Amino acid sequence: MVEAMVSSGDDQLETRLEQRLIELLGRLRFMGACLCSMSACLCSMSALSGCAIQAPPDLSDPVPERPNLNVFSANPLVTQVLIAESNQRINFNIPFTGDDGGERYIAQLWLDWGFEGARLVDQVAILPLSEAPLPDDQEEREVSLTWQLTGLISAGCHILTLQITPKSNVSDSLPFHPVESSLVASTTWWTNVDVHFAEQQTLKDCPSGPSTFANQ
Image 1 (cartoon, rainbow, N blue to C red):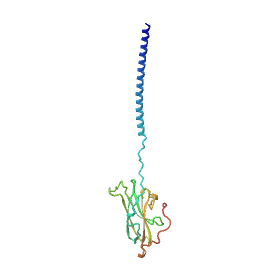
Image 2: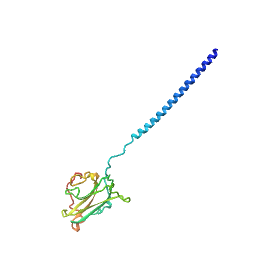
Image 3: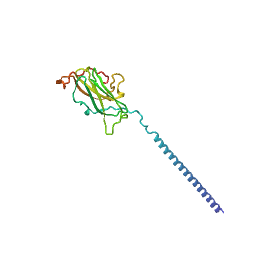
Image 4: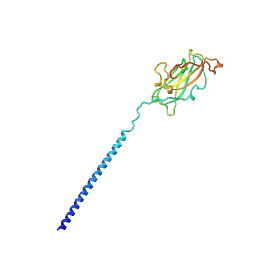
C-alpha cells in the first residue's frame, strides 16, 4: 500500500514537471517570435531612416563661368599690327567656349581700354546655349564686333580690346563695363591709325595715363 502511494506520487510529480516544461517551451517560442518581429521592425525603421537623411538635390541657380577665347583663330590675327584709316570699318571675329549657366554673355569692343579716354565702340549680347544650342558637330561659338572709325579718333597708336563676360558682371551705370576682372576673357589688337606708310609697323604715341575704371 505504501509503495503504491509512493509510485502514484512520483507519477504526479513527473506529470507536473512535464507540464511545466511544456509551458516553458511555449513561452520561449513566444519570446522568440516577438524578438524576430522587433528585429524586422528595427530593420524597417533603419531603412526608412536611411532614406530620410539622404542629401537633398542641389536646387541652387547655376553660376556662369568665365569664357575661354580661341585667340589662335581670331580674325584679324592678334599678332599683327592693324593698319586703319579714318571712316574705315573693321570687323573682329573670335571663337569662344564657356558654360554660361543659362545667362547671356556680353561681348564688348573697347578703344584704349584701361587708359584715359577709353571708349566702348561696339557691344553685343550672346544668347545662352539653352536658347541657342550649338549643332552636334560644333563645340565653339563665335562672336563678331565692329569698329567704325570716325574723325574723332586721333592719328597714331591705339589698342582694341575685345572682352566677353557674364551679363551679371557688367556695371549698371554708363559706360557699361565689366566689374570683376576674374570673370572676363579678353584679347587685344594693336593698331596704327592714319599713319604714313613708312611708319605703319612702328607703334608710337600709344595710349597712356590712369585707368578710367575701378577694376583695372
